[in-house]
Amino acid sequence: MIFRQGKKEDIKTIVGLGRDFCPKEYISHSEIIEAFASEPLKWNPQWWLRFESFLYSHFEENPEWLHVIEHKETKEVVGYAVLQIDQEFDYALKYGTVHDILVHPDFAGKGLGSDFFKYIENYLLSEGCEFLLFESGSENHNAHHFLKNTNTKLFQKYFINH
Image (tube, rainbow, N blue to C red; front, top):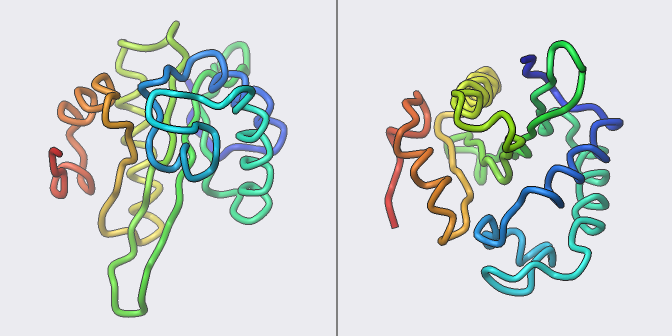
């Protein structure tokens, strides 16, 4: 597998992955804010069309915040992450947020997600981030389990269980 920065032509595939494999438990506050979902555990009808528009505009502003997993042989995108880098005030710490991360179920449970997360963390470190926030739906227990078992430089140090 190849981890790389996303390209504009990857967006349709990313949207398809999201549409096909994001369960309702995936919904966090940003999905509600962006109107992909109307409430926790309830996607809006055809939410992926809004997601596609969001990704295109996000890509235009910050193409470096979209990252993908590409299958080495087939060149197919089998996972993605949507990131954001912020520094609220001049004196504040620079930090990264992982808004979305998804690995195609056919490739899940084989360490690929952990390797991708480490790749993301290294990218954020190279951009000067001092900590990492991970956005997750309150009912997304698979993500919570994954995070608790992920050993990272930026995230584990600041992990707070709510």
